[in-house]
Image (cartoon, rainbow, N blue to C red):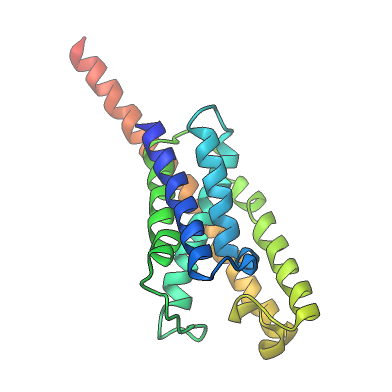
Length: 204
């Protein structure tokens, strides 16, 4: 089952990227988006994990980034009530569904039901390294080309102070999301271990 879920996650992410490139007529500029970068990460990690062991903290990081993609998209970018809502004509296109919904769900399910290796809580802080590096990349690139990939990192509209406030909120939210993944993984692992002990005792 572990191989099946990991392969499905990798295929979903890869298919989403391929379909997005087809939708944008091969525009390599899509790789500036966190969505696409996180999808590349989860696709690679899942594919490798299907054939050989990958450290739990690496799989956890890839899972978090995929979950960030799904959470931010559905709660902010695709939510008309959000101040960061972005109208998207391709919202219901296959690539959008795969990248923002299917892949994050598969990644989360795989982490909770398949990848039950213990991970220390402070890795939730370590995992923030990539999102923070992405923020720096988006700001530097935006300063150069005067274009920003997401409205919450648009220093031209929000100013650097506004971006800093948004970034602080996202950092806290992503840390808590990482803790949630670690905590839920530990909870599922404890329940299954308890059930195994009960079954063994009953069988004895």
